[in-house]
Image 1 (cartoon, each protein chain N blue to C red):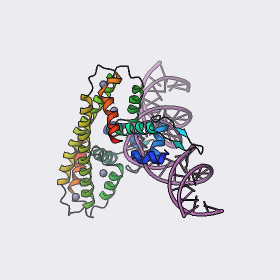
Image 2 (image 1 turned 90 degrees about the vertical axis):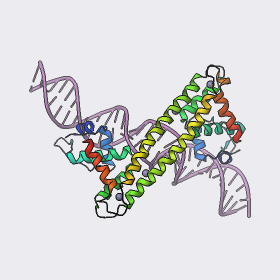
Image 3 (image 1 turned 30 degrees about the vertical axis):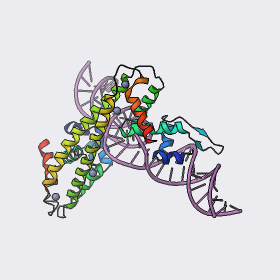
Image 4 (image 1 turned 135 degrees about the horizontal axis):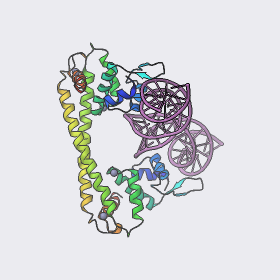
Amino acid sequence: MKIGELAKLTDCSVQTIRYYEKEQLLKSPERSEGNFRLYNKSSLKQLMFIKQCRTLDLTLSEIRQLLELQSSPSIQCNSVNNMIDSHIQQVEQRIKELNSLKEQLNYLSNTCSNNGTIEQCGILQKLTSDVAKNV
Amino acid sequence: MKIGELAKLTDCSVQTIRYYEKEQLLKSPERSEGNFRLYNKSSLKQLMFIKQCRTLDLTLSEIRQLLELQSSPSIQCNSVNNMIDSHIQQVEQRIKELNSLKEQLNYLSNTCSNNGTIEQCGILQKLTSDVAKNV
DNA sequence: ATAAAGTCTATAGTAACTATAGAGTCAACA
DNA sequence: TGTTGACTCTATAGTTACTATAGACTTTAT
Ligand SMILES: [Zn+2]
Ligand SMILES: [Zn+2]
Ligand SMILES: [Zn+2]
Ligand SMILES: [Zn+2]
C-alpha cells in the first residue's frame, strides 16, 4: 500500500510517517518504479505499535529503545520495566503539580468579580501582590 | 544592576532574560557605556510578575496580553477572567488524561515479572497485542 | 490529453527555552 | 602596567514531535 493508505489506516499524517522513517522508528520501505513508498502488513503493525506507545507518552527515543530490545528477544527485560516505572513516577509527579496549579488558578479566579475594570481586577492584583511578596 | 544580578535575584537564567526581552515581555533596558544591560527595580518587578505567571503555566503570549491589559487600567477585565478560566479547564482536562495514562501504565507494569527475557516480557507482549486488537 | 489527487524532497516553523562560539568589557591583583 | 578571570555581548543552532509549506514529479480518472 502507498503512504496515504497507511496514514488512513493508522490515523497518522503522511508527514508523520515520513518523519518516523527519518527518525529510524520505521525502516525505509521499498519503493515503486515512480519512487513512491510501498508498505506491507509488517509496516502497519510496526506503526501501530509506535502509536500505541505514543498514547502512553513514551518518547520517540524510548520507543526506539523498545524496538531495538525486541530484536534481542533473549536478553533480560529489566530495562523495559524500569522505563515504564520511571514513566509512572513522572506522570504521578506531573499530576501533583497540575493539582496544585489548579488550586492556585481557582483561587485566582475567585478573586475576580468579573464586572470591574482592569484596575480593580482581583486576578491582576493578586498576581502583582504575589510578586511583591517574593521581593 | 547588570543582567547577572537580576538573574540571581529572580532565579532566571541570563539567556532567559535576554530571550524575554527579544520576545517583548521585558522592555529593552538602558545600556552602560560598554553596552551592558542595566536594570532597575521596575525591571525586577516586571520579571517577577512574568515568573509568577509562568509558574501558573500561562504562555508567553498570554503574559504579553496581561502586561498590555495592565497598561489600560480602565477597560473591563473580562478577558483576564476568561483566560484564567480557560486555563483551569485545560488543566482539568490534562489531569484526566494523565490519570487514565497512569492506570494504563500501572496495568502494563504489573504484567512484567521482571526476571524474564524480552521474549517473555509481559509489557512488550501487551503493547504488541494491543496493536493486534486495533487492527 | 488533461486535470486532479497523490507523492516526492527539502526547508522552515512551532514553544520556551538552553547551549554554544567568538569577541568585547571590567575589576582586581602583582 | 599587564594580565588574569569573571562577566557580558550578539548570533546561531539545538531541543521535541511534529506540522506546513514550495516546487516538482507520478498516477489516476475523465
Ligand atoms: Zn519516559
Ligand atoms: Zn477581573
Ligand atoms: Zn492558556
Ligand atoms: Zn518485562
